[in-house]
Length: 291
Image (cartoon, rainbow, N blue to C red):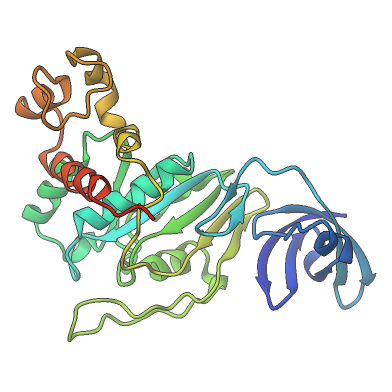
């Protein structure tokens, strides 16, 4: 029998199958070969107690990818959720999320939540900043259930990792898409305007037999220290079409003359918010200490 690992806790793996969710242990051969099953793995299992849905994982099918953070396999895309307001979005952190996904080869959809309590000014700022950066951008309200069908269409027939900081509304949106998830929803701390960490382990939720979403722990910072500064521009997809106009091959788009990206910035074709984040992150990578 085949299925997909949707959760792993303390050596037990819970596998979504046609007959229900089966609680499994991994055969000793995996430890011997130093292979660890991951959430998202498609696996072969044998039932040892059919009525109780208990079994063993006897094989792991080939992976299309394996992510380091979160530790998961066979992920098709990322849905990056940030609040429009309460708390206000941290653009630098949002770009770090997008870069982290680009670095792992995952396409991203940006989902701005809490549309129901946002003003026109906040919406226009976000549209200006992220509407031309090459990503699909959604404006939704998890609390008011606005835009949920649009999200469902983006998720259809894919396994999607849901990422974003605490307080952005990930749990509310996941509960709206998949009520059986019955996730704990963290309240925003009035004192600091941030969410409490409500997700403690990576877990897949089945929206249908071929559509899964994975929640991940809320992050407050993302370290890009495993990157070289020269790699950073590859994680800004909107730069690509202007690089052919750069005078120098390998232009970093920082201080070089006759730079196509900076020309596009001056004409408003590249987001100033995104470009300024790029320069900050470039300097961060340039000045890091190497050990």
